[in-house]
Image 1: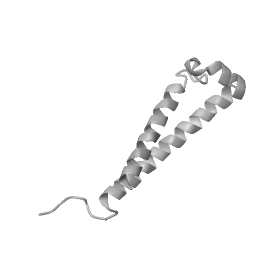
Image 2: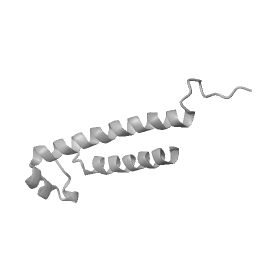
Image 3: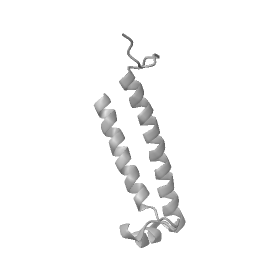
Image 4: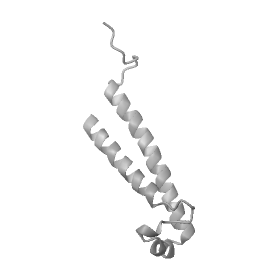
Length: 86
Protein backbone atom coordinates (compact mmCIF):
# COMPACT_ATOMS: atom_id res chain seq x y z
CA UNK A 1 0.00 0.00 0.00
CA UNK A 2 2.77 2.43 0.93
CA UNK A 3 4.67 1.56 -2.26
CA UNK A 4 1.57 2.31 -4.35
CA UNK A 5 1.06 5.65 -2.59
CA UNK A 6 4.72 6.55 -3.08
CA UNK A 7 4.60 5.76 -6.80
CA UNK A 8 1.34 7.69 -7.17
CA UNK A 9 2.85 10.68 -5.36
CA UNK A 10 5.90 10.59 -7.65
CA UNK A 11 3.67 10.52 -10.75
CA UNK A 12 1.66 13.48 -9.49
CA UNK A 13 4.92 15.36 -8.80
CA UNK A 14 6.21 14.71 -12.32
CA UNK A 15 2.90 15.76 -13.89
CA UNK A 16 2.85 18.91 -11.75
CA UNK A 17 6.37 19.81 -12.87
CA UNK A 18 5.40 19.34 -16.53
CA UNK A 19 2.25 21.43 -16.17
CA UNK A 20 4.15 24.22 -14.41
CA UNK A 21 6.84 24.23 -17.10
CA UNK A 22 4.20 24.44 -19.85
CA UNK A 23 2.81 27.67 -18.41
CA UNK A 24 3.97 30.91 -19.94
CA UNK A 25 5.59 33.10 -17.28
CA UNK A 26 3.81 36.19 -18.61
CA UNK A 27 0.38 34.58 -18.32
CA UNK A 28 -0.21 34.58 -22.06
CA UNK A 29 -1.16 30.93 -22.45
CA UNK A 30 0.69 27.79 -23.39
CA UNK A 31 4.43 28.17 -24.01
CA UNK A 32 5.41 28.13 -27.69
CA UNK A 33 7.92 25.33 -27.03
CA UNK A 34 5.03 22.93 -26.57
CA UNK A 35 3.00 24.09 -29.56
CA UNK A 36 1.41 27.09 -27.94
CA UNK A 37 0.01 28.66 -31.11
CA UNK A 38 -1.82 25.47 -32.05
CA UNK A 39 -3.26 25.11 -28.57
CA UNK A 40 -4.26 28.77 -28.49
CA UNK A 41 -6.04 28.42 -31.82
CA UNK A 42 -7.74 25.19 -30.79
CA UNK A 43 -8.92 26.19 -27.31
CA UNK A 44 -8.58 29.96 -27.48
CA UNK A 45 -5.92 31.77 -25.45
CA UNK A 46 -8.10 32.24 -22.37
CA UNK A 47 -9.43 28.68 -22.33
CA UNK A 48 -6.01 27.01 -22.67
CA UNK A 49 -4.47 29.01 -19.83
CA UNK A 50 -7.59 28.50 -17.72
CA UNK A 51 -7.41 24.73 -18.33
CA UNK A 52 -3.73 24.60 -17.38
CA UNK A 53 -4.38 26.68 -14.25
CA UNK A 54 -7.17 24.31 -13.16
CA UNK A 55 -4.91 21.33 -13.85
CA UNK A 56 -2.15 22.92 -11.75
CA UNK A 57 -4.52 23.50 -8.83
CA UNK A 58 -5.95 19.98 -9.12
CA UNK A 59 -2.52 18.35 -9.13
CA UNK A 60 -1.41 20.52 -6.20
CA UNK A 61 -4.42 19.47 -4.14
CA UNK A 62 -3.90 15.83 -5.13
CA UNK A 63 -0.25 16.03 -4.02
CA UNK A 64 -1.25 17.57 -0.69
CA UNK A 65 -3.88 14.88 -0.04
CA UNK A 66 -1.56 12.05 -1.11
CA UNK A 67 1.17 13.28 1.23
CA UNK A 68 -1.25 13.33 4.17
CA UNK A 69 -2.62 9.88 3.34
CA UNK A 70 0.89 8.46 2.97
CA UNK A 71 1.96 9.95 6.30
CA UNK A 72 -1.06 8.40 8.00
CA UNK A 73 -0.41 5.04 6.33
CA UNK A 74 3.26 5.04 7.37
CA UNK A 75 2.36 5.98 10.94
CA UNK A 76 -0.18 3.16 11.02
CA UNK A 77 -3.11 5.47 11.62
CA UNK A 78 -2.26 5.74 15.31
CA UNK A 79 -2.87 8.82 17.38
CA UNK A 80 0.50 8.71 19.12
CA UNK A 81 3.31 11.14 18.52
CA UNK A 82 5.28 8.60 16.53
CA UNK A 83 8.24 8.81 18.87
CA UNK A 84 9.64 5.57 20.22
CA UNK A 85 9.94 5.45 23.98
CA UNK A 86 12.27 3.00 25.63
